[in-house]
Image (cartoon, rainbow, N blue to C red; front, top):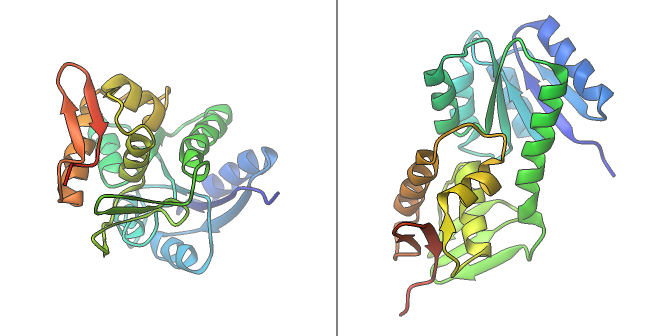
Length: 226
């Protein structure tokens, strides 16, 4: 089995080396990038299982880099930054990041967060690779979604949320369940995170009432009757 391959994008060489040491001691394989431009190039040239992304970097900051990554890849992204304000965390997650860790951090927490994120993103590999539900086609292996043949760009979290709903179609799922199974038990955000992602997902799918609101409970996925 090949080791998990991680791209570390950070302009501080000491920090890159420190993160690499922590991760390689836990069995990961690491590649460095000293800025966002180099990181984007390496992501387009190589396959990675995870990206660790700093925010304050020359040329392009981590927020801009994350936005560009999401135009061509759904690779899991963890922000690792000294910027610890709530607004920075919210912005990073809204742009498509999957987790946010504030410097300084403990090596145990970093490895635990990575493993938790990889567990959450691996469930899409457990069932059949493609599914067609009404006008929606989901390619789980390629992490792509299309509606009537037109590609629908989703963030990783939107994709995970859609797949989880589909895998439990017809079942009313509470916001608490969705937050726990899609974001993970260690996620400290509010239930409004679920509502925001559902709203965006409905807008992007743009066809039919596939995701229904179950008042007093949460949401369920169901193919509309034709």
